[in-house]
Length: 291
Image (tube, rainbow, N blue to C red):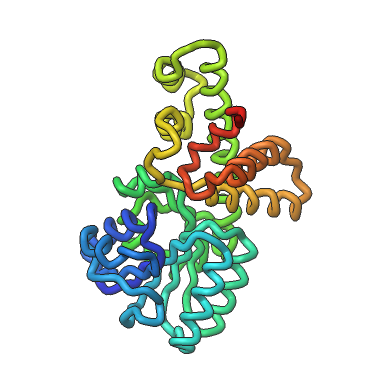
């Protein structure tokens, strides 16, 4: 694929740095996001521009999707097909975490309109999105995946995981099981350190490089110790959604996930405390007794 125009839907906390990496690789990227300030953020990130709806985006052979929820993906596909019922020759790359069933359902709708659909969820968070070091689980027709690898490669390492839609999402489900549990485990451990009368910053520095270390401990741990107003890179609501997708997939597969279920309770409790729009590290506040 030579440098060309593409549409990137969802230029939020993780989508914007991904779109910026693609633009820096030489592609002309138009962002799509209804949020206030999207045009300014797109300009500052080196994008060609931004619009509020996919229906307003200029014609482009590739559409990359980084919306937050299954419902948002369904609405996006509705809007896109209403605006351009003929999707022949276009490649849609669904990088959102929406679950296997959703990507298959919306992928079928797009395919019936002539589009080539790639299931390519990512892991690595905002930090690795900024550096182009995400891991991408790409599933779909081999030729379709090959066509978009130059775009995906600007965001990170592409791991081809299967030729059927939903296989990438299934791997991301397993990934999000671990992420959901690891964040809560880090919060519980740091809360325990404080309860034992230890300086939590000191403890974090000592344990994160040992056998108990994890990406989530090192990435979320410092923000857990900063307070409610820490930088938001992934919201509590995202993990309410993602842990729910994991729970649904586990039930459908008759898989036992007690650790996931306990962790999900913490995200739901955080949301009930009014922390849904806060950074997911604020799940640590569920360990603090309310007045």
